[in-house]
Image 1 (cartoon, rainbow, N blue to C red):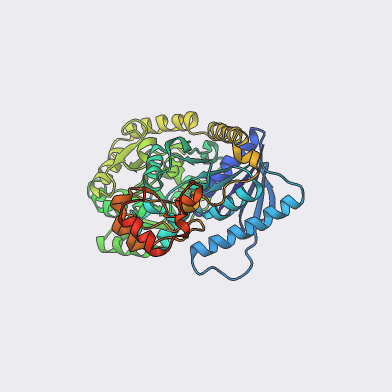
Image 2: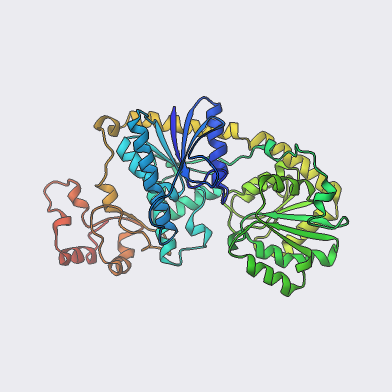
Length: 482
């Protein structure tokens, strides 16, 4: 099977967990005998075309004017993806299946699905609605629209946890039988320290010899709950003065976090390490006594798995996918989300009982090796691919030679409580005034057809899409739409 993988990031260009996920999944699929081509953005110092552990990586040089915002920049990347695929097709390449990761590859995934007549699989790693606890501006609404569009166009949607499955169903109303839950994984071997280094000298960069290290690594953004960790610091120090907090990562919240630490009088006990490479990250794990994942929103929590694989006892927030990965007092500890007192209490449980911390380390490391390995994840993903291809070959679209590009897609809008008007029209039919929908949302329900629905082929009736605006308004007010 030849798989075309579309991803905004790929090592060495890594912003979050998506890039590592795509890399590890692709390499594991290659080990199962599949051919994988990954299209991604350019990375400084990396070749445009490279074979990485069997994966054909195509990095796209971004030419032309810069995007006005993040969405426009991602759109430019998608256009470049199409350019590269056209070149591959011209060279004689054919692909069995397209796999897009998040909305950042939605445009290219949809276009290639219809242009090459190949089924599309999508992985939703997180949602804009979940990250921001709602949609509060036009940019967030636009990203959410693209997420919904990708789930609509995909033959199957993969997510990493039961929590994310519920979120996708709630926000986008994706049918249950369209979603497949496959957990994330880590390469446990990547977190084993192979290089000989002087731990004492390395450790002294971050903490005194008598201090115990509490370690956070990740983006410095609100959703990661680092502000909760800062608030927990004085509570930990009050009961365990020999604690040092190392915070690795970059993000827009860094200045505010530093300022808050200063106001709390604990800035001398917190080391902001900035961005760290993989080697430094692993060495810090090897020197740490506790790893903390205090996220407010976390679809899965790959960082928790990494800490567990590195042999560090973890404290996580009892939220999202973290609640499924970490079982309290069995392979880690869970704190109430956004609660610094609960977070401090759980950190102290490890610091005051090293034997208990050692027990948790052993349990967690064994579970990561047995349950969260990429070989298992790749086999489950391949099962989804094979099922999709079987269904596609038996479908009328394969025989017809095209997917429907209009019709139902152009006539259907999805809504959810509290966000009824955030989706924009995705097809060719014009959308009635937004205030008209808001006024009549109770009569039409959560899923409804556009007034042009009858133009799809209901015999003996005049096409609503040809009716004037006054007739549309009358139909809606009389409740004739369903």
